Length: 265
Image (cartoon, rainbow, N blue to C red; front, side, top):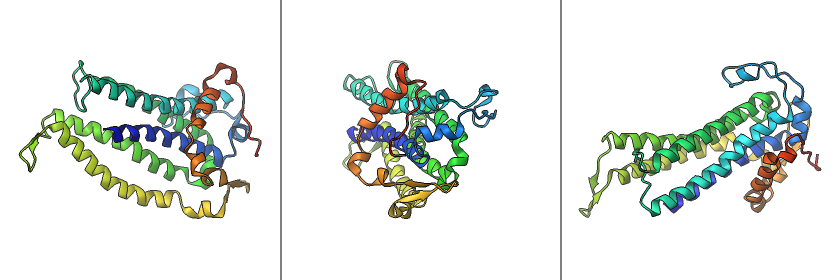
């Protein structure tokens, strides 16, 4: 169970790093705004921009995209610790949809948070898709998100099957009764092992090593984008301090209209 909670925290970290990768591709917040600032936002039901008809891209728009992603990075680990706390007092069990348990409330909060994060990422892609095209963002996005979000919905689906008595308790080889919840968790872990093999192959093509071996990539405008800051140091890449610094920059009222420029650009 502790490993599961560590995985929850890591999922949130992956989301943040994916958006940071897109920012790195485009040269940072300042460069992104220089490309899209003042352009009209095209109304689209597919991307959820119907309510933004007639508006233009501003730093506030970009700030919302980052905030929507960052809130998931904060909510997901927090919910993981809440689950541990509730389990210690017997108020949480996977697949328990009763109002007296915490599972249903955690699921609702998680779904609101993850939906907001996805919406922010879709808005960001909608605004920068022409700039991101050379980097094949759709393949990267689908690969990363499928690994994270589909595993959650798979778990919810198994919980529903458990509730509907499709998944039943069994007796193991030692004659010990095993609950339906344990059986459901076993199915989840088994499916994830298979899916991770498929995901590893997909990631091989979504993030080819040649890009990082060359040290840089070139966008559609002929600009060279260095990749050293992403792959040169594992310690720097895994540093959670970046998330906290970014959260302060994006949520603090003082910085809401401030565009951050990288000194290295």
